[in-house]
Length: 272
Ligand code: KIV
Image 1 (tube, helix red, strand yellow):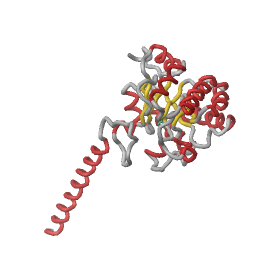
Image 2 (cartoon, helix red, strand yellow):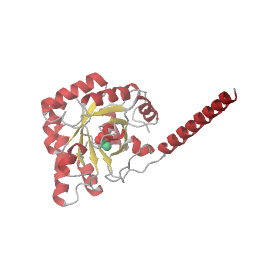
Image 3 (cartoon, helix red, strand yellow):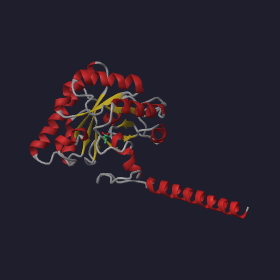
Image 4 (cartoon, helix red, strand yellow):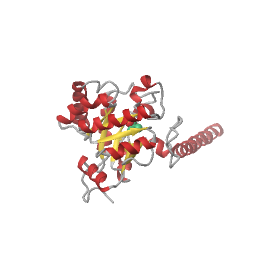
């Protein structure tokens, strides 16, 4: 089933219609023109230009060094490569630290990349920031649970909502973000039962990653889905292809062809 009958780009109204109709929402990250085009042609509903860009494309250890300019450059390429999926851009570390900074960052992203919405990491404390952007007509996706921009405060990457107080805090944060006007909520690495309960309590769609099957949709980092990595992938990501092996094989064959050709030329030159 498709969210729209014509070929127009999906909007938050289409995403909400999927949720109301009980159809799961498929979201994937993309960071460049070609990959985004392929993802778009394959029927994904939302493409997230995630600040995971820092890990999987730019080679940083964390997402913290990613800048707004990095996001805009990649989000513009993704937007140019797509026609159907809704495109959402992450606001990277420090660019949504208070409502006015977030508003200025979001305006710059929407004006310069063409993206339709921004994503902001953070629990209940992010609600006033979300509200400020929504008040200005900017759609915002929230993001709770494992929030990689807070890795140093969290002390690592682990599953969230393991005990009752932690679960209650996540549920309260989800409700606050919905009340602030978030149009959807990423639930990253949350105990599946807690993610299911959040999904049950909210009207807006939850998009899970490593949070069990009962969210309104699912998201993955494209590199983890297609096996395009040189570093280990998170345990919850089950790659459906081994693109890294295909690249190594093609490049290996090319290198050996080039070397053989060079050897043949050297021999010819030696014979005269
Ligand atoms: O940056 C990112 O790719 C994300 C997804 C993992 C949700 O935030």
